[in-house]
Length: 207
Image (tube, rainbow, N blue to C red; front, top):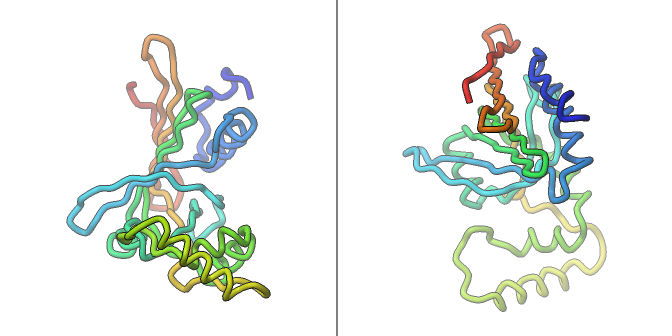
C-alpha cells in the first residue's frame, strides 16, 4: 500500500481500515508489527502500561469483534483486567509513521480458545509459562532457572498442560483512532466511535 492510498482514513469500517494498515505493517515494519502497548488500570484508576503481542483480531470475535492477547492472569495486568475490565491499546509502527489507538472493554476468552493457542506455542514457551509466577518477586535468576528445570523434568514426554491461570483476553473496541504523520506536524487523524445500533460514527480530528 502506498502512503497516498493509506491516507484514505475515510471508510466507515474501522476493522477494515485496521486490517489494511496491519497488513502493510506486517509487510514493511521490520520489528514486531504485532507488538502493541496495552494500558490497564486498577479499580482506583492507577494506570499501568506494557507491551504485549496481538495474537488474533477481527470483527467476528466475541459479540462485536475484538483484539486478543494472552498472559498469566495472576500478573499485574491480569489482575487489573479482572478487577477493572477496561483497557486501551496503541499500535505504533515507527517505520510507517502511523499509529492506531483502540479503547474498549475486556473479557476473557473461553478455555477452548486458550487451550488451542497454548498448544500452538513452542514447548520451551509452554514450560516457561508453567514455571513462572509472572510479576511476583523473585529471589534470583537461578531460582527461576531451577523451576524451569523442574517442570521440564516433570514433562519430558506428552503435552504440557496449560496452567489454569494462563489465559487470553479480548478487547472489544468502543473507539478507534487512526493517526498518520504529515510534514510540519500537520498530521492526519480520524476517530471512530461505536454507535448505539452497533455501527460506527467517524470524524476527523485536528492534529
